[in-house]
Image 1 (spheres, rainbow, N blue to C red):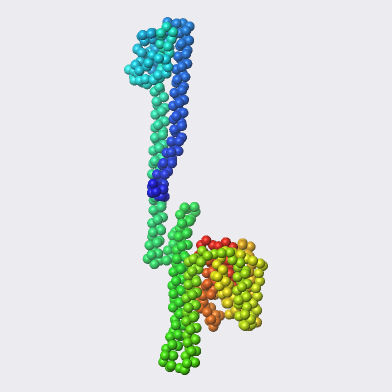
Image 2: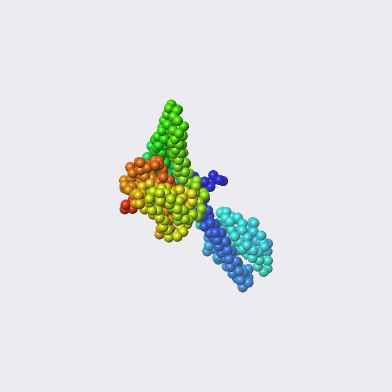
Length: 460
């Protein structure tokens, strides 16, 4: 039973045929019942009327008059069209087109049906028996098979319609199966090419109102995402190998030098402090990568709560205020009120903190940084961090959010190139985006968070 409920070309054809025949039966059954009742009722009414009329003749003219009338009527009609029989009390024939009283017809008055032979032809007749005064008996009958040809045509038509439905169902199932198998083979060839290493292969789009275009487009987006993720893993692996090699090499060189030279304790402790800083740098890289991995998989979305993003931004600005004062930078915060959205408060705080930290790195002495929270017309909330530093060239804006990427202006600043990558990941997790624009001079970095949490991570 469960197999029949599954979609397949065979089940589609079976369902189509069953449904069509069921509809045809619902149409034909009442028609057949109405036909039989109408024909049977009309025949019985005719028989009763004929019997009543002949009884009235018997009452006026007696048995002889009725016999003469019956002989006159049957003499003008074909034998099987109408049957009349007048008999005495012993059922002997007095008039009519039947030689003897028919077998199977009782003497009692009423409607009866039987198979009899008329002029050498076996037929089924319906008869109305009537008892007349003086012991006489009258039979009035008609051939009930006279409409047999119409009934046969009805059944032939019903069988022909059922056969046509069955043929169309088989053809439709075959055509659907052939079409689906062609699409499945194309998907299989594309998947085989991707398994073989051709990540650029995509499913063809038929265009128009093709039913499988939606599936093909979804699979193509999935393939693009997989290709980007594979390239990202490859790039991240290379970047990790490059960025970790330097601090690890420095750490090894420093420890090796200590082992060979064995300097005085003050110098040893100074080198140890430097080595600890190198280890902290490596740990920081791994922690950032782990946070990005959590963001990419979307596991943090299960812990979303209502967050006042404006309050989070205000707290982050307050946290970095002492650092800004030490660097001689004016840090200010602006907000039009509470801006609540579903989200992860810790990730949002870290993303806003990264934007402020980047602005502090590049803001000049006596510079200014502005953190502003506002609601967009579409309902999204934006946190814009603006500075008056050197900014980012237009050619690098699309690349600075890539992991481990560091532009020319950031070569001499601390960091490993994961700050903006984490900000973009947090924005994507919350259904938003990271927008970078010129501030004239400086950079305006905007973290956009949607008012409704995204149900799936948008494609990168």
